[in-house]
Length: 413
Image 1 (cartoon, helix red, strand yellow):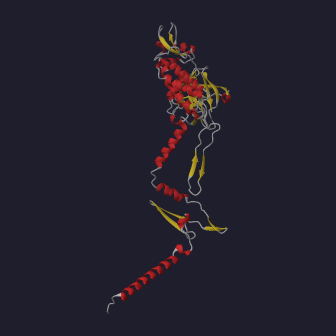
Image 2 (cartoon, rainbow, N blue to C red):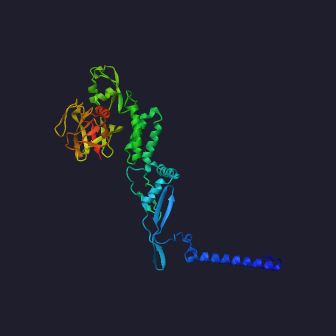
Image 3 (tube, one colour):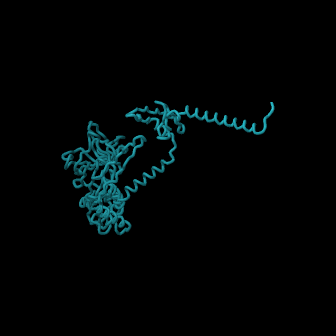
């Protein structure tokens, strides 16, 4: 077939180009008509809503977890469509949360810690033993649609603690000087008795007072000017027991702080340290603790065990029963069983300090005591028949402090 050249050939080529362009336009129109956007539906991205058929299952792949969630049906209300929101699949969401890496978790925790530190360190006196009067409890609120819960932690109500703060600050400075041990002790003790002291402050003050007691009490040196401890020159005919009775302190405690191994070794002309007693104790049922005081000055805290539910240790004021301090006595329990010190599971431990009730629920009660235990794992719990249990070493120390008929034991909630 012969080829055509010239103007006629150029005209023929243009016709072919127009035909191809027309066919392309027709194809685009057909594609538009039959596409989702050309079927009268809006772009899903316009409003962020999935335009799927009713109850369509959408599959998402996060890491190694596959999650399926049904898209809720749309309901027409007043000519408009609204989503019927179903409850989220919490189990699936939890599964995702457990499998997803969370590199920002540590950052979030550090931020929370900083917030708490900022809240509590602005004024330590804002801390109270319980919720301060006027403070607002923490609240949690769920954010609809996200499943996240926002917790609002209110700032505690400010409590003015100027008296306790001042005493603690001054006493802390005095501790730096060995010559001001007594001043620091008395100032800390005043802070402990202050009505404005917080639970956190009281805890810290007791630690400081316990350390100071090693300097002014638990050694053979009496600090000059101390009204609680003093030196005494033994006179001819003196006995350690008689000296202890005069000062309302057991002679065993005088032996301990003066490093006297045998009371019969006391000699005339010897200088010893004596204590102006008596000691007292306060037991707190809520914290399973016993605080020991020399007169009104705090000395030590011990962990105790208390009575079982139904056999609770009675609250009120007790005193050490005269003649009631014994070392591993025979004992008959509430079932009539007799226990001997040689028994491998002897329940009274190292010491027995009998108590007699004076006031409150304790009034007129007897049969109760402070004693050691062969079950130290039960300290800090309700495990006794009503007595106050102590670790055996602590029971010996308290036994050496409490003086019959004069030392009181107050049991508080």
